Length: 189
Image 1 (cartoon, rainbow, N blue to C red):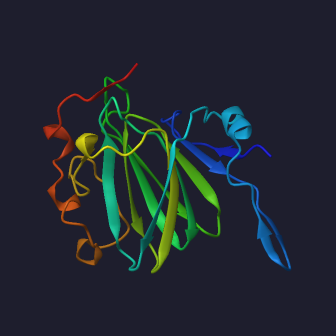
Image 2 (cartoon, rainbow, N blue to C red):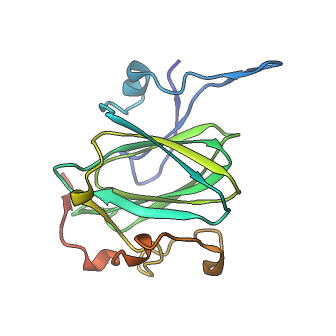
């Protein structure tokens, strides 16, 4: 069954999707991905790798990440346990929304999925302990092309819904530059 598209004002390439879930006394069943149905909903890409993360503590922030061409990645993100605030930032030079972000709460209850297209940086912070996030990507991981933007870049103005003292970051994510320091990587077409 085709997922329902929810509006993402100003960012038509970003897709917030509601996937049907059938609940009964046994639990639930959900077809979480169907290539034909997702293509009909505007996510007409080929996924090549599935990733999963577990964050033990509320306030774990992962991001803001992207990969450089020729290994740029689109991502289809969902939460199977817990909850996240998922943030995407348009980093396509020449885009009318360059440097702007949108944020969504995605959790195991609302069962939403977020498609993050190439040309956007992506990150999330966990809103609960023991949060599991799964995502599909359109290109394989490449350490050589892996990059990011500072999660707390003041020019982005992202409200992560938590105080900075409650945020846990990896050493790598502490080192990302602000958007203004990045070279021109993606161009708006």
